[in-house]
Image (cartoon, rainbow, N blue to C red; front, side, top):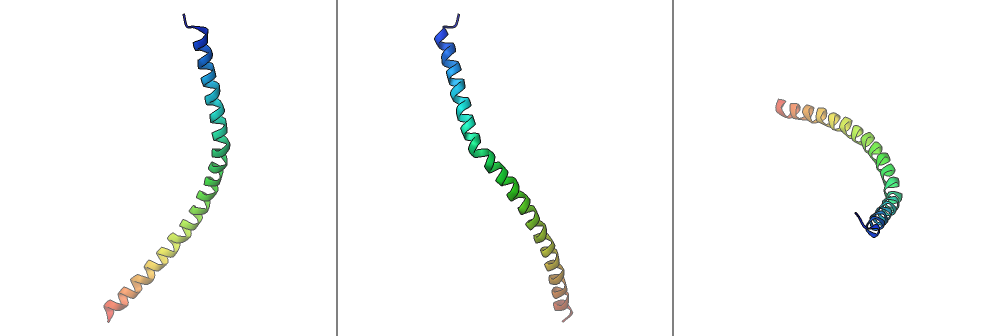
Length: 70
């Protein structure tokens, strides 16, 4: 048989853990939302970068072709 004090200690530990979890989530949840916004902005900028890099590659290919023609 488990002593009552051990059961109470386990319940107390669980309550303390849930309290810590709650307070950590108060900090983490807004940061996760900010992360989603930042990732969406990053995807837009990364897409623009890929377009610019493709244009740069075309221009560099033309420049290299002109150099080889000379």
